[in-house]
Length: 167
Image 1 (cartoon, rainbow, N blue to C red):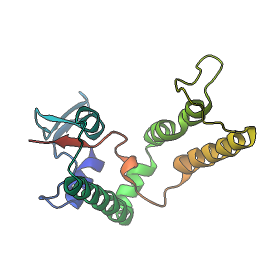
Image 2 (image 1 turned 30 degrees about the vertical axis):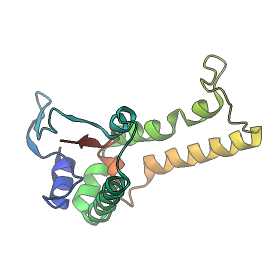
Image 3 (image 1 turned 90 degrees about the horizontal axis):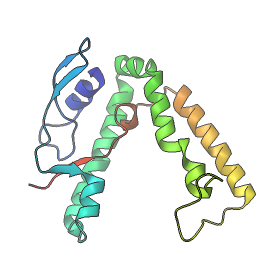
């Protein structure tokens, strides 16, 4: 919760993209009381699925810019915060979750397995050399996530999707 509190302080109050404010955390009961996103909120992914017309180009640019500013601010300010970096460095479980979230099923998603063939009509047509290269990239990326503490990223505290409230 300390990470969310610190990230919340990095972002201006009037920012379009932020993290919820944490009001209370009980570590014994594992209860978090945090800012509500509102009854009409949904993930950005779900919003884009539900709204066939999507966002007006002006709004899409505004949201994309706000997301980019948020991510870059969190990385820049978080990396400067040595105490925060120390907190994150100790969280091996989160690093494992992040590594698995981004890379754990990548190869399987691209080539399938005997038990799980690809659900796509068109396979990606990857050669054995391509797959071998991707396996090395996955291995190196997971090792970097698990061992590199040189930079704070949004993924250090949040692997989920952005929440959008269109009201």
